[in-house]
Image (tube, rainbow, N blue to C red; front, side, top):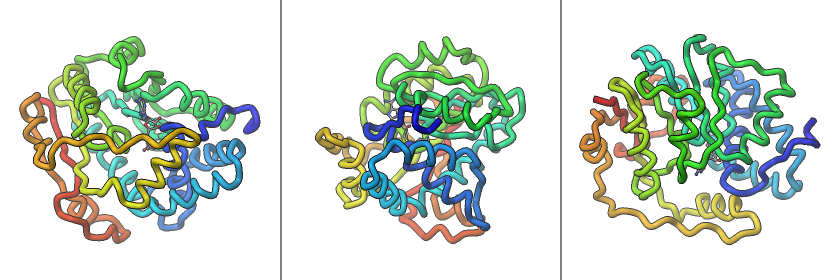
Length: 281
Ligand SMILES: C[S@@+](CC[C@H](N)C(=O)[O-])C[C@H]1O[C@@H](n2cnc3c(N)ncnc32)[C@H](O)[C@@H]1O
């Protein structure tokens, strides 16, 4: 099977494989923070499509990001459960990658999970899931769309109901909300959000010029020139205020507070780093 699957070896979809490497590694640990049995299937199928030295670079990158990223997966698992408990019946993954929460979290049958991502991602993901005989516990909708284009139409066509409270998940796809296209995505999802919908926006303080981010951009580019660091809004762009203006009540939770209950030390970070939890008015 692995030979016949088209593996995205470069371009932005390759980043999803890196996260699957991280989730596969976490799932093997005795003290795992979550269990993602499909991750190892994605990793095995992907490795078969990579030149060995490129795969070694991928693993080295996954190593560098492992600690923080794997804890981040667990934090989103926690927010999934909270959003469902709060009444959200639809969940939209913006840039779903190789996420398998529709399979692994024992979500109730009346939950609808919409996975939005690029065609090359699903060309790889769907055959691997099918070969593994995986079955979701809830309704799962594959939405092939580019978030920079008219993804609203594709989402509505796949059965999304704007009148139903929704949890919108951005887990490493939008980056920071200081770029125009990210803000367009958030404006669109705001229009599609019934009162009581949830959204979480990351607030990070990273240096995009740090070595691991440089290597990530070069790796993703493959044979093309790496994408330049996007022009950013000034540091004083106030995401919380902007979300409030467009219709969300927000509450900031620092990484240090969010991770305090976990059984694994998550490191103490700059207290400005964390998640802006937003609920639609
Ligand atoms: C770092 S991965 C994260 C995937 C997933 N959220 C996770 O945590 O495993 C980023 C994902 O966003 C997707 N993505 C990036 N830009 C996109 C766009 N313009 N439209 C749709 N998906 C996009 C990529 O294909 C990739 O699957």
